[in-house]
Image (tube, rainbow, N blue to C red; front, side, top):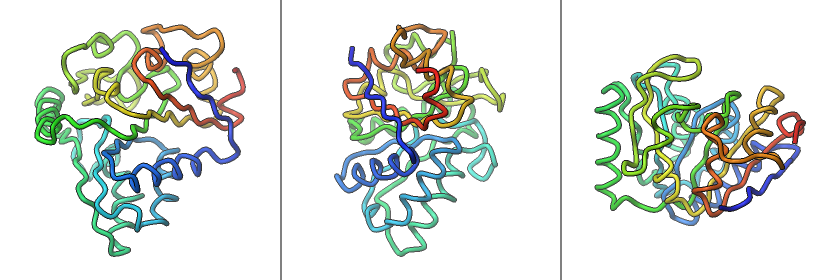
Length: 232
């Protein structure tokens, strides 16, 4: 179990973008996440489009919707990062989206097969978010996904937070394959969850899934703004 490296910075989205750029320049497999703060980070990273030449990109979770749906993590990443990089004339090695439109079970099985086809690669970096309920990826408080120990990807039939659509998510055994994990959390709405997951009195608790990360991850960095860190 490793203590998280908590970093309160003036511009956590820019700090995240810099970490993402370093990872893709290193040539490893990188896992993207959804959310408004990562969207800003992707837009900033896309300004250094050349770094993504040959990049190998995955997703840690997505909603069971089509790739053009406004709730899709892939659509957000495509608009904020992939399309601008392509417009700059840079060819990404691959970006394997989760085919959530297949439904939670088939979508999860398909993504697990895709990982196996690439040798179930270790990840140089996994980016994660944090919900106000303490969830991370699409692992919600008290759900069965938290106890999964054999599969790398599972379906989530019922989301624990809006939008209430089924999901597909990495499990903790999959997240544990990362050399580094970065959690990006900004805004006052995340302050309670940040304290429960990473504060001085935090302990692993299925009521706050992000609190379990420290049991699985050797290198865990949490990027925060002052509002998100207010209760630490």
